[in-house]
Image 1 (cartoon, rainbow, N blue to C red):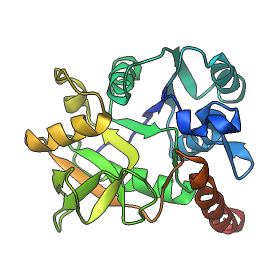
Image 2 (tube, rainbow, N blue to C red; image 1 turned 60 degrees about the horizontal axis):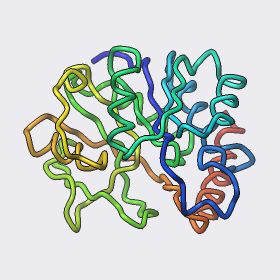
Image 3 (spheres, one colour; image 1 turned 180 degrees about the horizontal axis):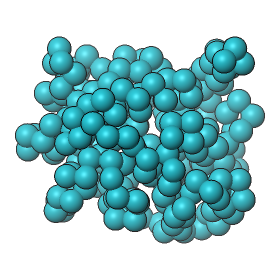
Image 4 (cartoon, rainbow, N blue to C red; image 1 turned 30 degrees about the horizontal axis):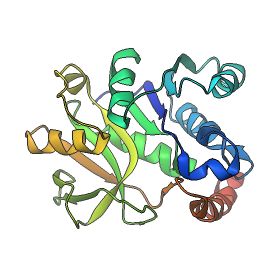
Amino acid sequence: MTAIRAGGIIAAGEGSRLRSLRLPKPMVPVGGKPLLAHVLENFAASGIESASIIFNGDEQDCADFVRTRFGNLAKTVILQTTASSFASFQIILARARPGRLLVSTVDAFCPQEDFVSFVRSAEKRPDDETVLAVTTYIADEKPLWVKRESDGRISEIGGMSGDTITAGIYVIPPRVRSLPLPHGFERLRDYLAWLCTEGHPVSGILIPRVVDVDRPEDLPLAEQLSMESAPARTQR
């Protein structure tokens, strides 16, 4: 059980369903600040010391924002258009600082208190486990269902049903980072399911709510969650 000090953010998706907002997805605001800022602030609050981020090749403005606002945290900024979320994940695995790696998609909006709680709980899990944030709050048009055992171990990823869904936040152990990556996967979810099927230990830690901000209609849910979590931040 070791501390998690390295992070990676996958922010290279097309964001095609948010184009009506005329902003790249990482810069879409929730609670008055970009999604990207929320994730980076969550990383900093969790004790992440070095983050790697991948953007689409034409999102120089996102890279400039990170270097200006979060330069001390975001040590590696990659501008590269990829074919899939799994391809972006592969690049993050290769470029991020060694050690247990905290990975978040940029569109996983999670209140900071819940995010930090997940990281602290993940640090208590065995070092060789892949740890997924999971939730019973369904705010995703294509949820990735998982089935958990009583001890938190995940027995199945994928399928038409389960007891929770993934939340877009993961901890990848060094042992898994060193595995030869399989070919033919287009989505990160396919890789996670493969890990489980191949018998690699995968566990899930429950967090209350996460909103996958993928469509304009997801924004009101994220804004509501932001407002509800604001009093807790003010009181601390």
